[in-house]
Image 1 (cartoon, rainbow, N blue to C red):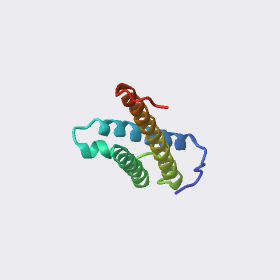
Image 2: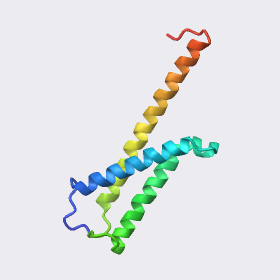
Image 3: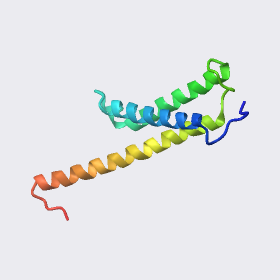
Length: 114
């Protein structure tokens, strides 16, 4: 199952980046959706979709659909790490976006922000 599966392999970088970008892009698209439930939970939607894609890839590896040694816990860990880093980045972006919005609103209403 995990013969020759190094932690620092190019495959792990691919898993990390794919899950990172799936989370970010799907979260962005969900935040632009018509439905408020999707907009409020956009980061969660991105995480679920990304983890589903990562798990589906591991199942396909185990079933032999791709040329690989099978499912790998290290690949799954790289998927999860990619999602966690994306969540951190998206959360920080939301924090800065909302803090900028409050400063702008305070200035337009005549309230001086210190």
